[in-house]
Amino acid sequence: MSRPLPVAFAVIALLLASACVAPARAGITGLPAEHPFAPLTADPTEVRLGFDWIEGGQLAPYTGRRVGVLRFGDGPRAVVLSADGMLWARISSRPHFTFPLQTVDGAFGVSLDRARGAWSGRLRWGHHSGHFGDGVPDVAKRAFVYSRETVELLTSWSRAPRLRVYAGPLFTVRADPRACAFQWITGGELRAPRAASARTVPYAAWHLDLKAENANRVNQSYELGLRLVAASGSSARFMVGYFDGVSERGQLWRTPERYVRLGVAVGD
Image (cartoon, rainbow, N blue to C red; front, side):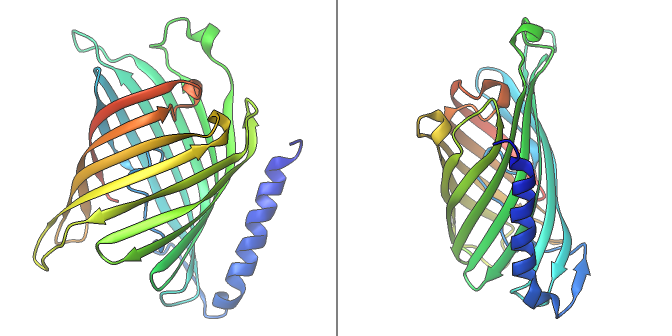
């Protein structure tokens, strides 16, 4: 593990070149609006903009975005190169309107997306780091360096517009503290039938993440919600969710968590 980061970049570069040779002949477009691989609705670490209220008097704001950088080729089989980034925090709620910051995590990454009929795929290199906030007692004594670089390869199948399922591996190419590299991710989303004029769509989503670093324990995330779609095409969703597993917050990466949450997300 002495040179994992250059290896990760080499893998991404090689797959980018091999995936894009053929479609690149049809042209390259900058800042495309489309994303062939849809977001993972119930994944607690997926890039989004919104916030959650978590039982026990905690708030979890998320601020993030995924942006298309280049599209290689034309039509539904084009390859899209995207960049993403997100900050998410956990804030406790106390009497007299004080909200001490407990943790803040940051992530960014680059990905390749491609769709072919009902199938789509995403290859992503990502970085994640976690930090304690000043609302944690003895923060200077408890804090440590938490950093991860990962490579993820997910495949998705959908029977539009009602059902979608996905699965694939994630490998940690650099970890501090050191940890087992392998994860297996699977999940999906089921949407209710929608009339052509309807602006609301009920849905149910799930996300399961088996992590070797946590003795193969499976992090489970479930979500029920309502999508609102405006005439302009913009969207928002309101949801109730449940999480059971080991914390996705870097500084608490060995800590079991179980909670119900109420949330809202916009733009995904």
